[in-house]
Image: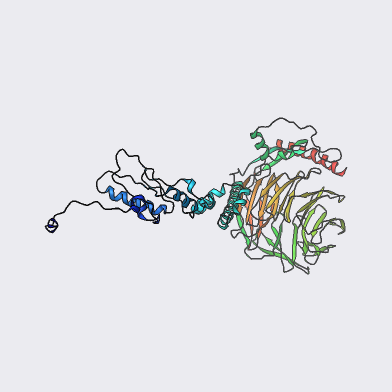
Length: 574
């Protein structure tokens, strides 16, 4: 007591522990902090007890407590102590672990001596899976789902709403990528090739052979030799690959790069007219008609309108056909009549009646006139007598019709093209391939090109009864005008551009800007002149002359053509 009064300190008495603390078998809660003991001085020679964590204690809470204790002891400058979790009752621990509610997965501690409960103590019936797709950034999730096929994507869409949203975005991205690739291929196909404007040459062109009845001859024994990949690609790019299973013959035709050189532009009129129709035959006059029911003439040399003014129709003018050399012009009107006018006196020389619908298209060859109308009829007229010689039937509106000495070719609003014999009116074949109304066509003795509102110009064979499509020329909008000259396809599109294609290879040689506003255009081509009709203006393109091939080559080409034409005519008449 005296020592205590003098401030001295006596020997420390050991703390008396109760039986409950020493044995650890009392009824205290296992969550009590006393249930685990941190020993900084393990007894030497004594076995290291296995650390276990009481099942009722939160793993995160004890991990943080243990980490805090380790940090506190480590700051004292002593060796890092071991941490022990000593269970007071192993049997109770296992029972509590099996019956405990599922907790979040335990986090591993930084120290190697600290362990987590084995997986066998976790409840297998309440396992929660983590949605890794939801945890990732959206662009990564879309990239992962984008690697799947369509069937797997549909299965992923059924997981939950978030996955369904991602799948929908992935499918939309696939559609956009497809459109972009299609646009790239289209632009690559229309890229001008830098064609030589004065190019002219006699080339060999393959055509199918005909038998005595005028039918194409199929090959009975085809070669079964294996072809290399390069050879197959060459055949795919070649027009002649369309005849791979037919017996063929070779003819010589002249090809030129028409309208690929330089040109001058004349603005004939800048008067806006959405319903204007024109025709040009290669002279100085351009025939113009519209809703005013009159036919006017524009002189390209004097750059002004000239007389006579033709009036007499009771409806708007829908089609014109001018022949300046012979001195007449045909006009088709909404009043269901066709009139033949003298371009010098202005007198109406003949009227052709017989259609029951609006007449849309006209063409003439020698002393015969052909017309197509909304009544689905194609009529062939005699120019001298005005009598209808033949009536050829479509089931839909006839949009375009052309004829030569042997054939009459017509296209309808349904997308069908029909080829008839001009003399007998017999139907030779029906060509199917367009997905929209056929707006224009052009053909020679051997080949036919048709243009449609579906944005394609398709190439066909005029030989015999061959009906397959040989080649296709793609456009961004509907094709409104076509000319087939010297194995070149000249097309006028609704996007305001004129394109020149090589018929044999399908490549685009040149693109001409006919309307800076991107308006639909139509044109008339004669020689090296092109008169272009747009809703806002009327233009003329004057091109440079193209040099011709040698006389010897031309003579041989003409002789070959004459022989082939005689053979084809005999087969068709038979």
